[in-house]
Image 1 (tube, chains in turn green, red):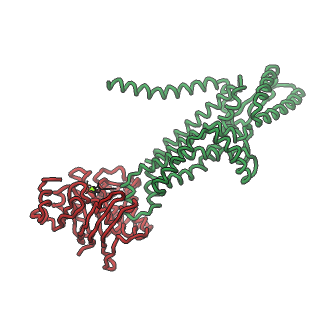
Image 2 (image 1 turned 90 degrees about the vertical axis):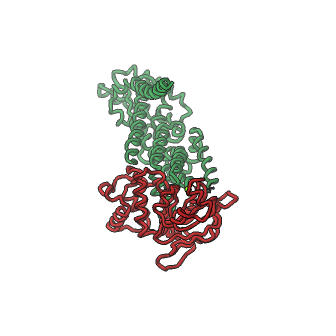
Length: 333
Length: 260
Ligand SMILES: Nc1ncnc2c1ncn2[C@@H]1O[C@H](COP(=O)(O)OP(=O)(O)OP(=O)(O)O)[C@@H](O)[C@H]1O
Ligand SMILES: [Mg+2]
């Protein structure tokens, strides 16, 4: 009996690794053509879906690149108007046909810098915005509010965590974005708007988990500090926070995971253009949004490049989370 | 002389219709050890926790009567049940320290643990802190074992060492009274012996009230013993009288092990 149980738990534990490795292999093999073509330059190249001319006579190149630039611009305009997806698809097909004809003269290159930067920055903004507020909420719920108030606010927070992200996206676009634009100026859809709404989305997670881990602080430990003459503030700062550090870091890790991969809400708010943002209120794009918007009509190298992006997102999430886990948890001990 | 005078004291927990302590009158003598004994649930902890008003971390308790604490500077007694302001609570808890059943090291270094009470009392001078931490650790018979690893986490100490650390931490702020709630019940016999020795040593400087389930412990270390039963104080006397010829039948039954 015990043997069976051992085997069962071992196999379910190894399943996790198999899935993890399986996903990695799938992503890697699908991304392989793009990796072979662009190598690591992909990460630092800000151009997405850009035609470049290779080895052509001088005169031909000039005219060619002129028309091509025009094409790229119209392409970008189309991406902003999201409900005209079909049109983009048509045009992309045309592009592809063009590619085939002019294969000797030009090729399409893909670089991931813009979505990578967009993903990292929106996540960073979300975290910077959400962390202090979540800590404040958690302290209030765990230590300051009377029991019944804490109970009802706690339920409200958990409800907030249950709202589907598309609703956050719509709310952000119609209500929040104009307010942000009024205050900081610039575009309504931007890095900042997306980051802030993302922050609102991860806030309840962080607050709830942090509150729960604060509540695990043993009462005698708090009493010991009070018995030395500590104030409530000192007990929170010196006892409860250090004690619940592990839980707090855990909540940050979960929030990071959610923020890095969030698609729907960000798709509404980030602007979805492949342009490197120069200011915090510029529109740009993130990795999941780039994939969601372009997967339907992508093929060939473009599709492979999207897989390359997915692989990068996978690696970023993995790296960020293991870094947080090993570095901070070691420090906490 | 009594450092604390508990007078006609009654205590009721919130949401409970009867008092858990009834009409207790009891002195805590200066530089002596007073043991509180009695069967489980008789109210020993409740009484001890009233003496530094740690109960007040949770709302809704009802106090009756008086608990007077001697102010060593002015020589006057103040009723601690009248305290309402946070700074008065802080002062009370600096005067009346507490050690719990389980060791409660804070998640910080050994040094910072002992220095904690001093730091929050406003002492910032590095060399003064070092002096007082060293004195407290020596006074708690822990210095020899930890002097070369003061910056390590207190969590790495053994249970007995952690408990002595907690005592050092409480002693460092120089309280008048120290309250111990079954300080050795989670420890092995050797650590228990060390803590008992330490408590006897400490009474030179502080007055001590200790709750214990261990009858031998009470008879070994205490000068006075109070026997409680179901929220009443049955008998209070010199320890030898309680153990050798108790006046009350209930006391005799309890110490001879016939109940409880
Ligand atoms: N927080 C509380 N709320 C309500 N009643 C309580 C609370 N704490 C203790 N009591 C009750 O008060 C009475 C005295 O409890 P207390 O903890 O003081 O006993 P004790 O003598 O310390 O027992 P033990 O030896 O088991 O520690 C008990 O009947 C207990 O059920
Ligand atoms: Mg008790």
